[in-house]
Length: 129
Ligand SMILES: Nc1ncnc2c1ncn2[C@@H]1O[C@H](COP(=O)(O)OP(=O)(O)OP(=O)(O)O)[C@@H](O)[C@H]1O
Image (cartoon, rainbow, N blue to C red; front, side, top):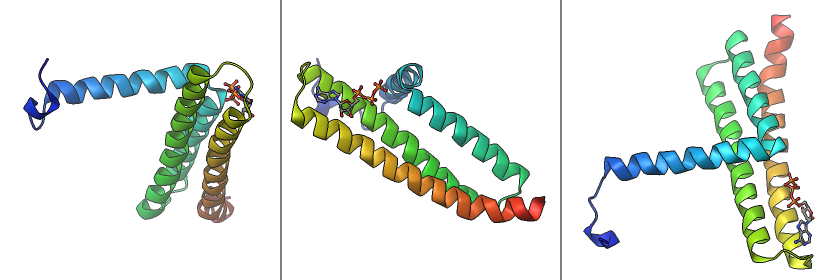
C-alpha cells in the first residue's frame, strides 16, 4: 500500500470517495436521527421562504451559514454519540457529560439560528402580508 507521502497532490478518485463516504454519513444520520430530519426540513422551508420574501443575497448567505452550522453540529453530535456507545455500553457519568455537552452545543447553535431567522425573516413577512 502506498504511503500518504507517495500520494498524488490532488486525486479525483480520492476526492469522489470522500464525497461518497460523507453522503453515506449524512444518509445514515437522516435515517436514524429525528432531530437531523427536523432541522433539514425546517432549513429547506426557510430557504424557500427566503426566496418568496426576496431576502437580499447577503442575508440569504447568513441564513445559509447558520443552517449549515446546525446541520454540521448535528452530524458531529451523532458521531460523538456513536463514539461513546462504541467505547462504553454501560451507564457512566462521563459518557453522560460528553453526550449532554454535545447536545448542548447543538441546542445553543440551533437557538442562535432561530434568532437569526426571526431577525431576518419576521420584518419581511410583516411587510409582505
Ligand atoms: N452510556 C451512558 N451513560 C450515561 N448516560 C448516558 C449514556 N448514554 C446516554 N446517556 C444519556 O442519555 C441521553 C440520550 O442519549 P442517546 O445516546 O440516546 O442520544 P439521543 O440522540 O438523545 O437519543 P437518540 O439516539 O434516540 O436520538 C444522553 O444525553 C445522556 O444524558
